[in-house]
Image (cartoon, rainbow, N blue to C red; front, side):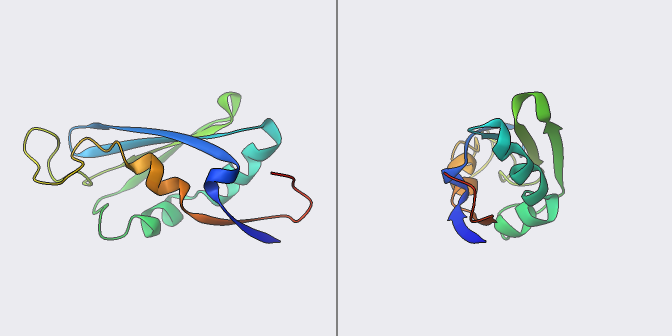
Length: 110
């Protein structure tokens, strides 16, 4: 096994709905999707955003898109119109999740 940043195998997009951040993580190739599916659990994402995501993390699998989508509740300090947080719209959540270190088999070429 080797350790790599998530950004080596996927890209991401994020945004907001009120106080919840939404983040989709999309594998670059179909053979990389199972790594996302198995590695990016709600618990792992909640730990990665400890101190920022104060609520529940929901996960939705989108195998036809090679993606997983997360809704991170109670993350944006009330949302864009009321929050004092620098990123009250959740736009940087995608960049932050891609910095997560993950393990992949040595035989996977990225």
